[in-house]
Image (cartoon, rainbow, N blue to C red; front, top):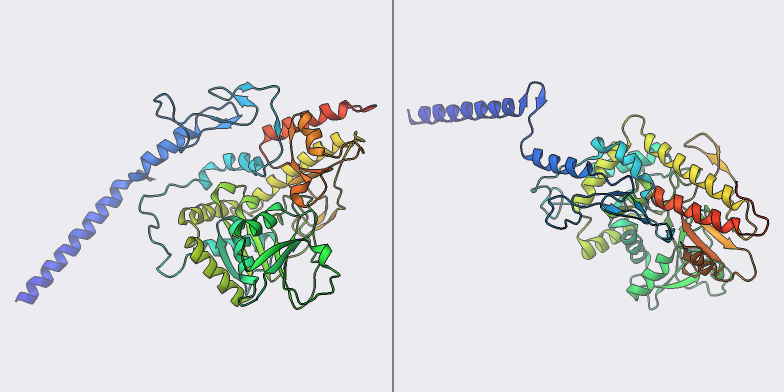
Length: 458
């Protein structure tokens, strides 16, 4: 009898629970639409900030500054613009072509606000790990493999994938993983000039006993001492000149890291799927989201992967779960339809910018820029020009030994050639910043070229 009563009581509770759940579902799903509850306020706040008018020369952000008791963030203006709504142009400001902020993709994400938006609950991923066992979202890993397969820029089958806080942390972990554990001397880290400044700066800052920056890879090519352990970083496409670099050093004591951050159809022909032992990529150059600080490596050797994983665990306990969620959402949005819209938009933008830049500099005898022969692109199935993220500009006049100073006088901020191990006759100009930054750069260059003897600007 007691058992019967308990069974009846349990059945009653179950029915009550089902009725309550049904009523809850009916309550939030009314008239063919979801009647949002806790997410409504968050969505309303995001929409209100997104609707803030900044005259097309700035943006307001949810985490932006709030001044004078206002309840909404104020506009953050692009360079050379000011005022409450960023409508006031500053005519004599400096054109910023230094940093690599990939804001050229912002218009794409403005057009795809709905598919790329996130509403994150306060209880989202509070744990250190996913399912108590890993720091990596398996669904995000699946999407990364899918993107590489779509573009055809990297082999990921039978490879390990590891996440990092931007390519910066991934590169550091790779250097540690490729260094010998019990060596009496540090491995030499080298790269071809002009090389990305971070390789040198990172090695010198950490001052590790495991590795030490040793400069230009070409200087070590014919060294008689072949017993030195070397780690060559091959940047392909290269930062700053966009060339598809090849490995320089060979031998049993040489390990290689391929920095493939720019190996996307925006910047270069995809000549074949990269199939190196260790390849590094970053979300910032794929989607433009540098602030999310998300990078990854595709690794062939399990031992190297395990050593990189240990480095990540000890240095940061893995990548922020919010960063992984945002990367997941962005890649999911990018893969909608045939998955080409993002790449087509980015390529057309960079192609147009290069056409404008080369048209201006073609009238100059004082300045030149890198020229790379077209190659066949398997993504677009045609021969195409390169459209690198940066212009590697050279001052040709004998007296213009400091090209950075020449451009600064013309109100253009560039990055000095010595930062890349090169001569100061070279500078790097960033072409991936906002449309305002690029337009002002072209204005300043047009003026500079027009002042040359016999130059005519069309």
